[in-house]
Image (tube, rainbow, N blue to C red; front, side, top):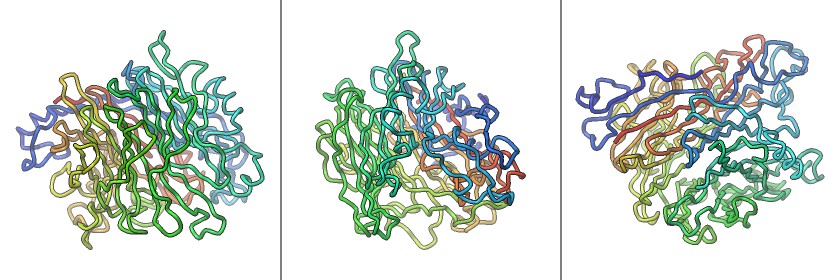
Length: 586
């Protein structure tokens, strides 16, 4: 599955001189600035194991074909690069490879929701993958729960099993941290069994192996430590993790986790959820112990719109930045906001508005699920991602229909990727601008969404800010007859684009990450209940020097046709994790 094609190498000086003859990588002449002189896709690879290597299912219905759904379902990847060895990468993803196969209990030849495709009790879903050659090839280590003898004993001691939502990070000493959700093992306490709402955050750590120069492969690695503790009326969700690696920081080595904390109320009209808020916990001893949570947002009680999608990053002097999405005035407008700590995560400023937004539709073009057209029947969001450049500038990227919200007009239907920048420590933010203008104009056709932003300083001393995002503009079917506001504009296959800026976000160069012809069809993905497609809630990127490492959920191997029968295809619901390595020159 490895592809390292020369055709993905783009020299932007040649492109500009030819007046952007390669249309798919063009930038409008009117906004040309300091573009990267070259961007190169050095290769694409598959991260998770091939279906032929999945565990053999033991179920009896239906008997064929193999492998059976949901074992071939992976999504929501995260990636980190070892600061001591940039060839050593760690990735995580939701991975159902150990789940039992669905069973056609009523013998009607189709699957009928979670009754026939349930998540099994006590089976982990946090997948772990490593590369020691910069992502050319990957080793699928299986699940975080069973990756080592120490991990197996640690999860048993906690009385829990992994539940996905992975986020990974390295510290300056080459140690890796994997944050994920965890559920109590069954049987649990009566209250937990009754509500089923509890979820805690667990962080597992792997230490740098000086002999091999890599991290993540020792038998003593990945022992889990609980960050939050079992409260039967609390569901922790959407965690993110980062480590202070700055040599100029007084908090060097601190580990931070941010997340959404939901509390439950059996009488709530919102599906049992009574309130939610953004929380942060820190560890000052390498993840061995964790502080009590510090709350950054107001408690969003019944009828206030919600606060979700946090991300945490660190500045060069130990500043802790957290960004998330919330509703400013009950249900409207929604906004991307940020807060900052100057004392190592003990206290945070009040939230500052980065931009108001109009969220992207979820799903993008209505509830259509599996049919003959490449529609988007998966859930999505406008949650932010964030990076802090080595000079201290802070960048936030998000997807939205409009940003600010006041810029929306009735014809607005496409989704764009926006970004904003702060040069004064998050006190104020630049007006949001559209990144997703690969083809020029005010924004590319189709939809662009799920952005993740990262930054690094290259060998020449130049800093690149890079954003990976899903991009539905590579599939040109119908574009000639459909305006940007036409409903057909949303029926698009999905590709993956990386935008790179070497001038602080003033101009952007573009390179494609995936090697599909016109993109993949999300109808090849599925929830366990088969009621919708499922592409997860995010894709991810990290960077080191002149390299950008991007990772995404990809449904190119899934079955996109109508119907839900095993008799149609053994690749039903097959979503995989793919990776690409991008290099840039200033």
